[in-house]
Amino acid sequence: MNLEKKIERLTLLLRLDGELDMHTASMVRQAIDSEIEKRGIRTVILNLQDVRFIDSSGLGVILGRYKKLLSLGGKLKITNVPPHIYKIMELSGLPKIINFYLDEAHAYEEGRGA
Amino acid sequence: MKTNQLILTFSSISENVGITRMLIASVGAQLDLPLNDIEELKVAVSEAVSNAIIHGYKNNPNHIVYLDLDITNDTLKIIVKDEGCGISNVEQAMQPAYSTDPERMGLGFVFMQSFMDELQVESTLEVGTTVTMMKHFKQTPTASH
Image (cartoon, rainbow over all chains, first blue to last red; front, side):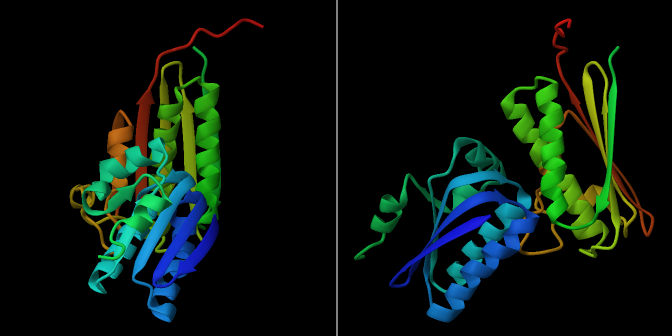
């Protein structure tokens, strides 16, 4: 799993590349949680374009970050979800609670200046 | 009737979950299964193996997980076995959203159930858990060599 991080003010953009399972979930958790704690990040945008696999461990780490951010008054946004990954997410009910966006630009735009 | 069997025994470490997915994907490709079915098999195997490591062995890396693939002309049988702590209430564990950990969604068995044609879970406390999953498929005529 490769992670590409970009930080702009209080927003963390994370581009994931690889398979999101129990092996890589802790890496993603640490990458996000450390920025929340260190820099006071309150909006996290996850770009899943290059995620080739996800299972319940991967969904769990996403749900966990959503809950953590929510409790801090923050937000989790998901962009660029490949169709076969979206199917698994849909089965889990995640799209009912987390906002999905077409791309990063749409995710940045929503909520800006509000 | 053409049959095939593959048995893999491996350490209970998270790195190996990806290897079991590669194996099932290769078997699925060899059986000419549709890509979507292969994706679903990968999720089902990933869930069963992750459960064995996380719950059966409580993330202790010094144990062995057993994966057994039995292929007959129209059925792929996948058996994932651990010799870990066992599940006290299998019926409860298989309920959607049942999880012992707030970071986890309790969807492992739900995915196995939705992606496989048959799912059977046998568990004995302090003895271990065996998950048996079946996928039926249409026989593809094999080209003669």
